Image 1 (cartoon, rainbow, N blue to C red):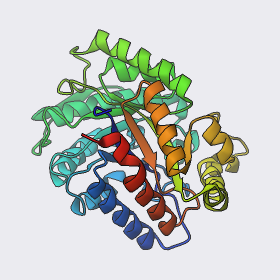
Image 2 (cartoon, one colour):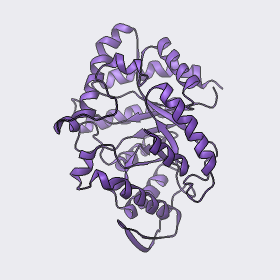
Image 3 (cartoon, one colour):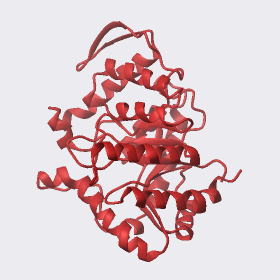
Image 4 (cartoon, rainbow, N blue to C red):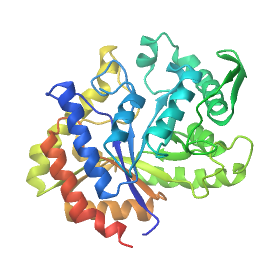
Length: 345
């Protein structure tokens, strides 16, 4: 399994401590991720919700770049409808240099209509705004001048004085949740991160690779320099000493994650149609959470790589009601008892 990699995903959910304590704890974990050899740290962008306490992922990652040396860093995702493409293109170029060429750029339109609505953006318009914003951002990071005219944005030969360290641009990523999003990712050559049960992932990854072959090298290809695309999936993880620890620590912590991810929806008297569950046992049954002893976790990860078609597993160690110490213990067990089985040269 020499061609597989592990990454980190983080919502940066609100905890009981202060914001500065939360951030300090994340930087402590980041240094450990860096030393352990994880490929990339992917941070989410959310607004007006305890699910995301880093609503400016670029700002957080600029700080993260200063306390790490080798791990790649990137948003998963920048919510493009909320950005001016000229400003975001400039910030991407800056961040690529601040991280010494370690930036990985995830993009999307956002899954929450309520977060977009707080910014005055209709969810019905967000797809068109996203696609045009992405087009303008790509022009901005690739060219000496940004020229673009569309229904939402206009830029007239703006000098782009700072260019990215990675050429023609840092790799672009996309979160795949449906056939529509899969087609967009494959058509534009973006690297893919999905979710859901292994059988669903198997179908998505196979379709993605087939569609990618048809479009690789086209004018729409955003990653012409990426010869072997990364195909990954997200999982919450907790490596426990025994099953009693899963029940005592991980299970109630997962309920907190559920409350955080559904809060805005519940505020508007509805629930998201994305299959979230408050029950960790059900999440494990449907493959969206990997929990158990080190031996059990090794078995679950082995099955994931053997059956999903993915070559990248993006895990979250800090989530829901887990304390800093809980996340540290789980991470330490993963690094010492699980990871070596899959990363031996």
